[in-house]
Image (cartoon, rainbow, N blue to C red):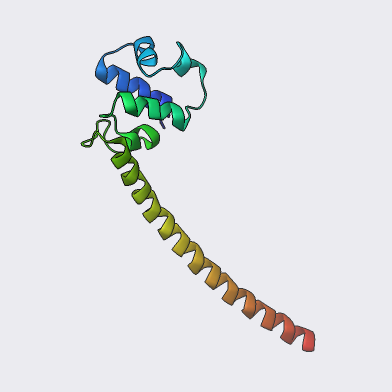
Length: 120
């Protein structure tokens, strides 16, 4: 089952053995924020990583990797996330370019076939 950012925050709270209200207060969120929100904004996540720099931002956002980061610098964690995503997007871009090239070749073949049929 896929976990959400909210689920991962709750797992982090269990790891720290602190209550949700205590956590919300410490990061500057209103009481009940976690339970009453559907999406947690980047600004709200920044509050969390400022208060808990050991929390792996990449794990919090994606659910991948370890909960606790070896780096306590959120900026460094963000760079790792950006670099990893950049590689994924570049690979996907190259795949799409190749597919586009193949489709253009196929379209040109079909145009030639249509043109030959029209000439008959």
